[in-house]
Length: 108
Image (tube, rainbow, N blue to C red; front, top):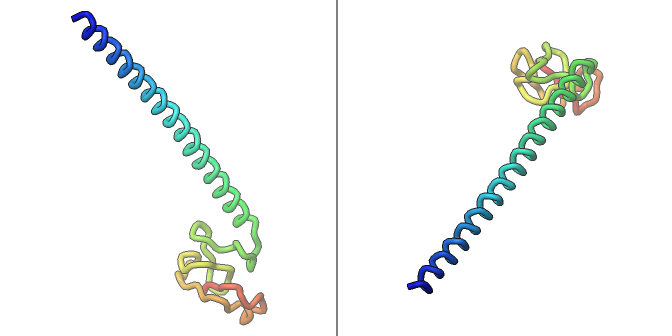
């Protein structure tokens, strides 16, 4: 009986070590995820802030002038999507009608 109880103790020690290692690995993975997800979120917000600052200081007809956050009036550009315009109507590649680059998109 002593041999079987020793085997049980050894196997329980091994499983206990495995459980501890599993917990350590899980903790390390969670910390890494927390770090990288947090970094990605903060980096993304910095990029958004830079784009917004660029839009606010952009001049009419610059490539980043219109946005959903700062929609343009009719006859202004550059818009990329309909929601970049107050009128919700962005015409593609009509800049030459406004004496601008032909690829410029303009709110109508």
